[in-house]
Length: 156
Image (cartoon, rainbow, N blue to C red):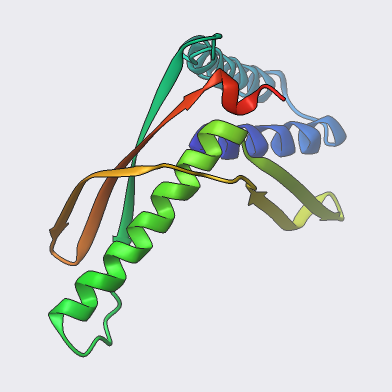
């Protein structure tokens, strides 16, 4: 997701720069940053697994959740932090399986950015995910979750 936000930021910056005159040394810095982001994204794409027939892919993620400050007991804090960590893990699995939809909008007035909005969303149905490990330390709960998906689940 951090690469997605980086890409959105670079694209919005490059659209702003297309409208404003720049000196040559500033433009070379932007192109270097864009090429670095492109290289990082292409290396990430190369590492993606392809779902083949009669094979499965195991997706493993670590979700994190923090206990709220106004709990009545340590047990309640643990339960709420674990619930948040499990929800975060499900979201991470959905992002890996289905991808993330990103909507961005910039409001520019007098050649200056007045408001920049980036919204992300994901929609998926996750079944048969297993919690592998749960750790709770200093108010932070981490849940390692994994799911195995097969070609038959997607072939319709």
